[in-house]
Image 1 (cartoon, rainbow, N blue to C red):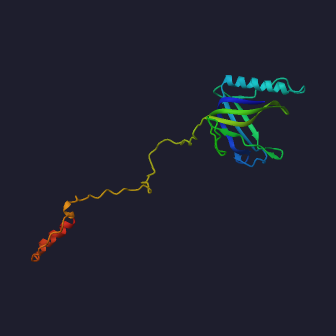
Image 2 (image 1 turned 90 degrees about the vertical axis):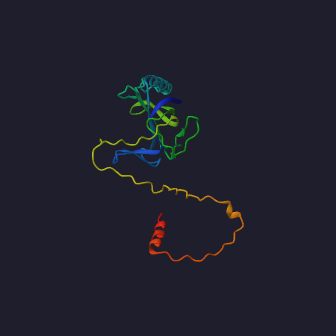
Length: 226
């Protein structure tokens, strides 16, 4: 009853851990595998030909397992969206009885196993390994029990777009990066003369010059600022 669903668009995957729907928050939230409603799941979108092929395989599995009291026909198991695509869903409960289920594995295009906390994203493309489980309870059908996903094209997470247009007013001023290292300019180096390697010459002492006037002193001080 194992089956591969190939080259489909991934929708709302929750595979990195168990999730359950929280009525208070009105959304799916992470949970323990033994909590009520805990499951791993992902929806996927297919074109018409893919949907027909998958339906035929599911119908065959249903017919092979069908008991006399079961309805003869397998009803349409997929929803159709506004673009004419067909949407299916693969699910694995967090636990069956007292035993937690093994988390569905995720692989890259080269069949290398991805980290256990890898978060698949809506819009990615991949292959989904499932097990067909025909049933007849309040309704009848074939469950697609999720086993693994191979990611062939990963969609980077999209940040939420601003709902506003551009108007005049406050604009955030970004300061320079405080961690940016300012590289000092290299000091100008004086040319090195070969004279420093020669023997020092005798210095003849001269008579000390007469003190300069205040004007001369002022000119010397000015030179320090040059």
